[in-house]
Image 1 (cartoon, one colour):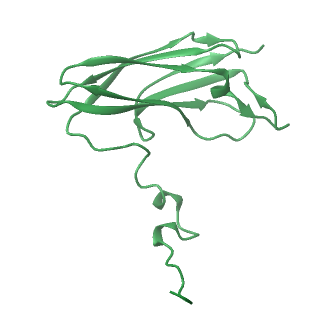
Image 2 (tube, one colour; image 1 turned 135 degrees about the vertical axis):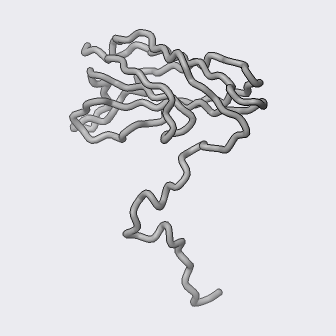
Amino acid sequence: MAGSLWAFPACLKPGRPTHWRRSIPWASGLSYTTFAYSSLQITPREAAPKAAIEIAVDVANTGPVKGDEVVQLYLRDKLSPVITYDSQLRGFERVSLAPGEKKTIHFTLRPDDLALLDRNMSWVVEPGEFEVLVGSSSTDIRAKQTFVSKAE
């Protein structure tokens, strides 16, 4: 319609608190069953900057019916000299489980997954402690552990 203004959704208007913009976390679907996470393992616990890091976690269907779960892996740099995100999605995998069934889900973190832009705008893997968070969404973390990236 000529001359009419586009109606901007009220929840996205400038000046609104950001929590109004993200009411549902990414990939947080509803399910008719429940899932339990256990046995989070990180190998190695101390890694060279260019080393791959293997992560494994057990996911079990603890509910009465078959269901699908999207297992999500987030990474948090515990201490960084530059401002970074609180956590970053670094992997996800959908798994179908029958009632009582358990599967081990594997992820691999590569050096690029740990890299950040430093003050000189160069991609670097900084030494320090990183936290691995695994769960069904960014707001529903079920298991977490840390590992250390060593200096070269």
